[in-house]
Image (cartoon, rainbow, N blue to C red; front, side):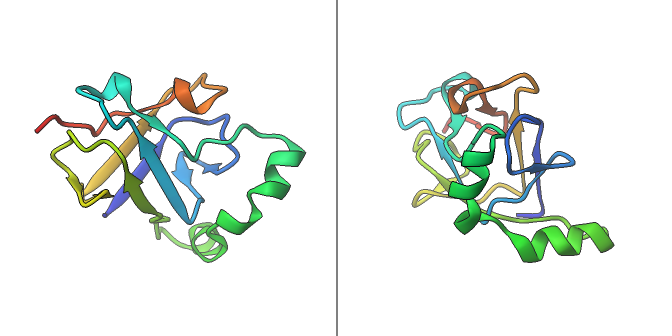
Length: 117
């Protein structure tokens, strides 16, 4: 994947619209459209969530991002089996966009890249 853009700015993994998680999980097993998908990795910004999420942080990618134009590229596991980009529960889209600037929970986000089979 070349690019993952995330507009869920209330997520603790969001770093200048890039995802600093080592792995993200798009959920929506029965989704027929993007509105039925969501980023299951979304975690609201709080001290407790920062501490509990340390193991999924992409520190190397975040450091590279600070000093170059390198983009962070987490692995994207996807439960949306009706999406054309889903290949054995791994997203193989060239670019992914997660939406909802005002989300405060995972269920309020959605994968705009979802395209039905």
